[in-house]
Image 1 (cartoon, rainbow, N blue to C red):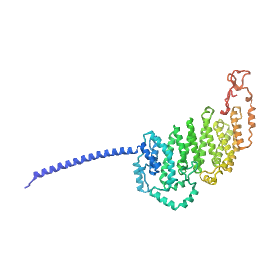
Image 2: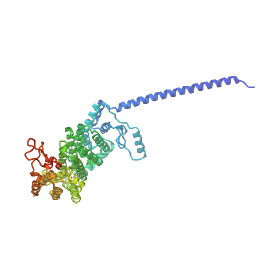
Image 3: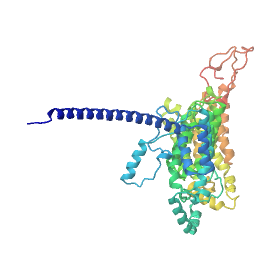
Image 4: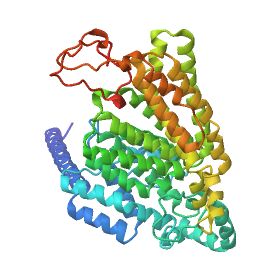
Length: 550
């Protein structure tokens, strides 16, 4: 006998219904939780976007933290915002792979596996500031370019370099620094001049060892490198805004002494400055100030960077001048020739900074001019002659005449300036370490030895094709020879060249007039009396036209 079968079946059905209801409730709860989480994520993203939006109020707080409270964390954050502003105009809006992360993704990596994993996570979670207001952009750029140098000086060379208020590592470094105070004082005399003022001298280099003594150096080094790279990117990308370029170049004058610790950024900066200095497109008055500021930064790099760097400055500036001088013809005299004159004066200034390096480069490039002349004398083909009888060759001759005249004629003044200060010997030692040393009489005499080969090149240029059509070029050469003779106080004969020009038969012919005349400079007797005499601007031409030359 079986009892209770119907009741058991009813109980089983009830249990199944209850389980179904519970599963449906759980599914509904999961759906509701997913909706809540999606809403919370979207709200969090909006909050994060709002937290990285740079507003005037947030920029004021960053300025106060970085420049008033001297907080390293605040300095990092405002440098991150500055980096974003410099790359704001990029079409891809992607920065370099080695860029510095924002403050919230900072951390010390020990070099182990955990550190590597941490860096990968930080790169994925990396967030950047974004700027929508042009007023905030202008204020951020001006504030960082004008005030970051003072913070670098404060944390690396000033009161903040003692490590007060820093991390544990900086405090340990501060204790070790106090214990080895005597050793650091003795090392400071060997490494370079100590910087105790709030502002560094723009024309004096800062030795890298001097910066490395600060406990904050390892922390600030990548951020300083990012700052320099971002500024360089801004300088190269603003091609059509001379005012911005002028402002950035003038503001960089305070940062050039720090580039001795960043050799990878020095050459790109030199390349960018030379490109702006020799730009052939813009000849407006506003851009002339950009050229001047670019040259001042080139000269400052040549003075403050370690010794081989000045040779790179001399090489790049001369090659840019030689390339630019191709366009210095009479057709564009009002635009190109004034620019070439300015560039030539700048190169003369650079080549008088270090006579030893100037001699090596002058020897090589004067020898190149001699090789071109020898090829033209031996072959006398149209190609070889045109390589000598052109504006580029004449402008290069003018440049080296000006360099040798300034070096030989001004060696006494440079030598006297070096002994005005009481610390002249110490400055010479520092220049020997970081600048190569300049202003010595024996090095100036090396340049004086190049006067004779340059004179022979100019005389060979005169004798290459002695015909009446190249009378203007011969007059240019006579002027260069007389300039060399006056600066070196030596005798260079030029009378035979001038008398040879006067002996030409074309000089004795009657001048042509606008109303008449024939071929070859022959005119009718008493003809063309009503016309005006044709004039030639000899300083602006190298050769006379084929017909009706005089």
